[in-house]
Length: 138
Length: 147
Image (cartoon, rainbow over all chains, first blue to last red; front, side, top):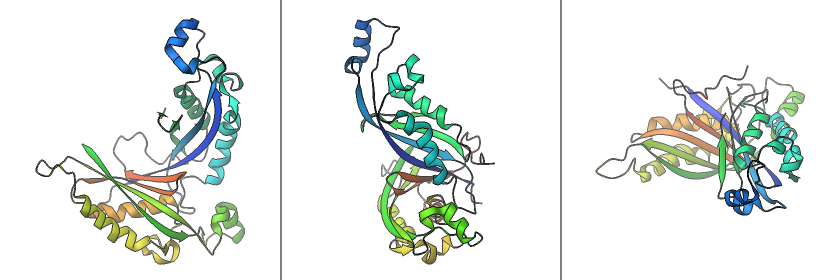
């Protein structure tokens, strides 16, 4: 008997933003020691790549888990418009109170995309640079 | 357990069209992909086999054998073909990344004799891919969330 198959679809999106790793809970010296160059006072930026993975049954009528015609505008509205070309610390409200590490950015993007109505969000993976990546699956 | 992944590429044409839909509906649901002349992609296929290395050879499987299986089952079938018209396994299915990945799984799985097929990942472009794996009991990522 053929086992049931599980299918997922992953789409990659991009945004560019600046951030500064700095916590109000620590002294200036502690922040510098903890975050190093990332604590530089004026911030710095990355070309972030966001991988969004959805799972669900493939609709036989369309062959799709979800139509990219729905996923793309949803991600665009919920994430790209809010994050692209922004200073995350001051222009994304969630990061006024928490440090915009890519771990936290990953969790915030997952939270925003969880509401996608056409399929279940399985995972968000972010490449902060080509050498660093972060994943969150809830 | 070790996972071994082999990558191959093939180029093929396809379009999306459901004969049960009206022309307008096909256009609305499938957008540019509904152009009946078709369009094409350079597909990249990553096939992962999992298992314990044989103590005598140090290998999970003979990669040459996997290469031959991929050539015979996938490349000979799909490379430089029109997926809607020339691949019988896709007949009656919309040749989306999801459906092609599932067809590839079913073509490969019976041929893997050393180790077991762990994952088929099919890239339609660098920014879009489907993963096909075997559903496992208790897997929290079970499909079926779609109402």
